[in-house]
Amino acid sequence: MAQAHKLDCESAAADCRFIIQSEDEAEAIELAKQHMRDVHGKDYTDEELRSKHLQIV
Ligand SMILES: [Zn+2]
Image (cartoon, rainbow, N blue to C red; front, side):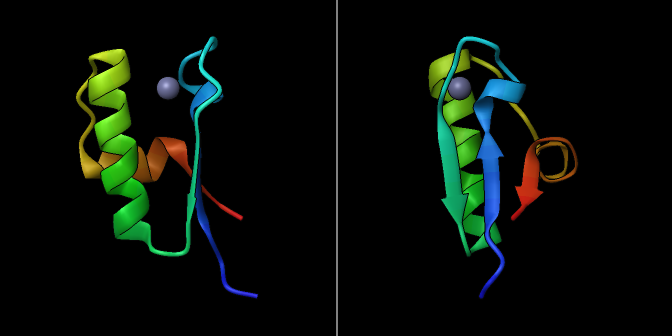
């Protein structure tokens, strides 16, 4: 089974249940970045998202 890149926003923002899961890392990062900016007003770099928030499942 292919690995998926998953962002569980609940670990970054306690009251948010947003989850992104994609087999494409670039897509997962792009969606995560958009979500963080639009919903939480925070700007994360690709590197921050990759190292701190994305899990491989
Ligand atoms: Zn969120």
